[in-house]
Image (cartoon, rainbow, N blue to C red):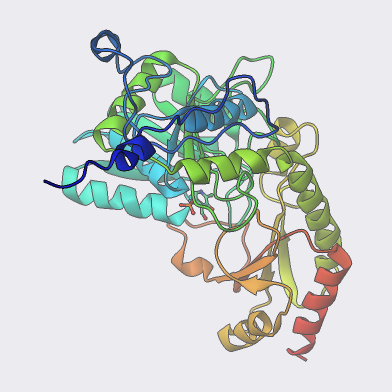
Length: 397
Ligand SMILES: Cc1ncc(COP(=O)(O)O)c(C=O)c1O
């Protein structure tokens, strides 16, 4: 017979609760797949639609619910679901709300992978994908099959601010649900659940928490926020069925970064405005894109919706046509502080090169011909960033 080693069992069943009276700046971190029920009564009395259903890790823990509640509050909504990336949050909305035969509308400047996902649904399930021009609400012509319209304010590459009020108004009249990719505004530039005195609001916001809420360029996460309980439950069911869940460690990291998110957002936005002024004076560009610029497409919509004058830290330029792909690549490769990479909202400034010809379905008159470079402003001093771009432009002389 083996010796009975009590230490092994005792170690496993050692007290695991922190004393209840301890208060810390950051909330405690819960990591869980299993959540232990106090009794069979607790097991059988629970219901999936309870706001805080502590039954299994995929449903949530105090750590994930705390983050979700904070995100809902920042965005002006009531309910929040968390997903492992911004794109998976987008996909949750599409798969929960669209069925075979439905029609979905997307802006011509939509975040590319969302359109890719919808095109995939179109091919497999007969969902019709229609494209509208975000600055022309008349181009949105829903039929009776229309179920959902995707909005993005501002579009994350070409930065047009859409005619949000009229698009939402038209959607409401046609009984079409509105989902806004709120990553650019981050819940700070405007309240998507209350546009103004007209009581206009979107139904759903999706936010790539990967950007400003994370703030570190190192964590992926997304959220889906709603105001109406029935709609939340519909999304919640799909969230549960698909087993969408996030790590407690990641949630705690983002929760920690929320404390300084608005300070970072404003600093990055301010630096982007400094760059905007300088970029507009450079002869190599045919267009500089930022919604606060009076020449920008959708500028008046931005002024009305973002009435406090807020904007994110993104600014794009279109090179004059004489700068070919080799020249613009040379420019991007020669930058030192700006790193070549996707995403935004972190401490390090990023640059990305796009070919507009491959990104647009509709004819548009507000964008010039040429290669587009997007600058995502980090937390470096704006004068250093200007110097970096100036050095890069010298390579083209
Ligand atoms: C506007 C916008 N929405 C959604 C996403 C997707 O977020 P994630 O990278 O977390 O999947 C991105 C990512 O670049 C984005 O720019």
